Image (cartoon, rainbow, N blue to C red; front, side, top):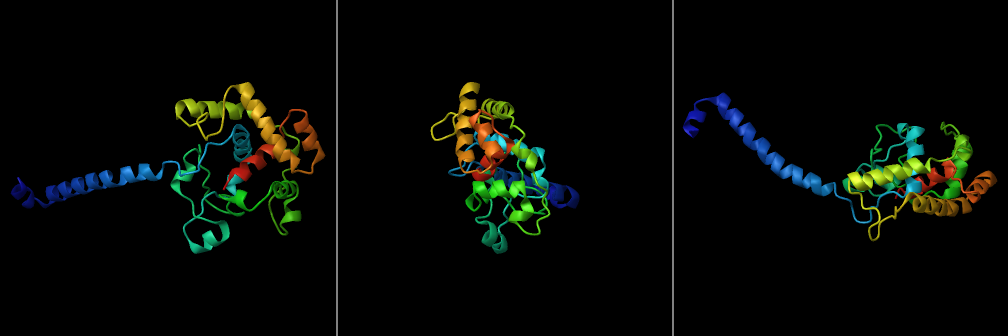
Length: 221
């Protein structure tokens, strides 16, 4: 049989291609799956963080900010450890981004604080001179959609087996439990803020978008 293939270069080339492709699949796919598993310490987002992530997506923050630190010294010196595949295991969709008008935010929770985000979202150029980022003052009055965030968490838990309600992982529970937990988390964020209308809204049981967004940004580490 091999003698027959050796006399026919085209079929021999096809045979070699098939064997090389099969070997590549056998080698690459298992390693790819392994690298995509959640890294140690990676957890699903809480309901409040998911609500903030929805705000982030709704206002197209990913159009100007990436969440992908490349493995180059210039990047790691500025932003920290380069990104690993497993860190995005619970991101649906991932927000890698394709350009940077502003800095990468993959690990922004390591070096920015709640009050910094509050001032920056209210008036970016007052915090970062020369910034072309618009102000997002509507986040301070708009109320975050906690119910939709809970629905998303509930869906990924049941469809993708996301490990909510497991030991060491965020608690989801019922809608009432999740709403109460999100409000408690929001109170911690609001305690570090200066905006009185935001503080009052949280005290009244509402969660402004800015609080949810800051919770999400603080989780990026």
